[in-house]
Image (cartoon, rainbow, N blue to C red; front, side, top):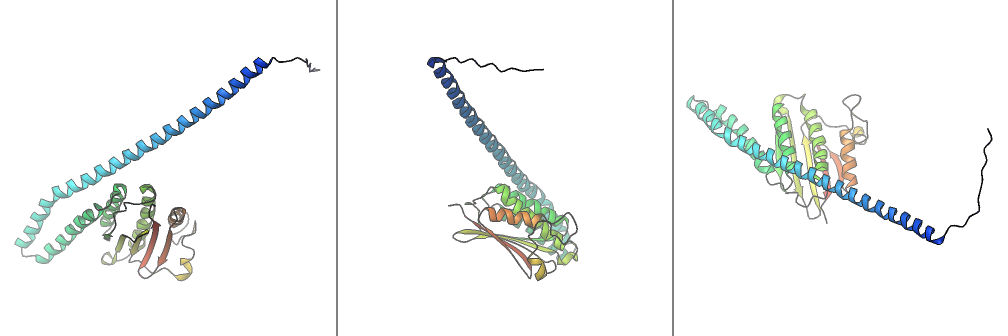
Length: 254
């Protein structure tokens, strides 16, 4: 089958060219307007989702406060019963556990980031369910946090999970993790310690590498994620022993 191309030499009126140029220019402008609107709508959608998560975390904190207030009378009755039975040591141990829960709640209420406070409360409850003592010291409200709370929660979640995994095989009385949140003039300083076995020196250099783990295959992502997030936001993370402590330094906003 033979095809032919026929070319007719014709002149296009300048008015037509102007009309075509106007149409192309108009379509380009409309394209930029629609693109800008889509970006704005996406930003608004993200903001709405963030606000929804913020409200959800606040509601969860309020539920925790109400639950503790509801249980407080029962705790007092239990302590009174132990004292009546002549068991002061049992009463003292019971009170220590109750006051630890209250202390953690009061510490997290100092934070200006309710998402972070909610995560810490959840991890503290998880530690309690595993018979792990959870120490918490909050000396900063994180008001000038330069990253999204979501990313700080990824850092804290991985560090606290690793700490619990390190001590869960110890005797119950030896299981202990500790979270400290502090600051200086320029940075926030967050440290997570645990009473687990000391990490060998040759492993310290590899522990932040993707895929490296002492827990078996398909592990070793948590600490790599921590380092990636921290360094992306201009911070540093370091490991020291003994006790095993991961310290994260994050610059403040501004």
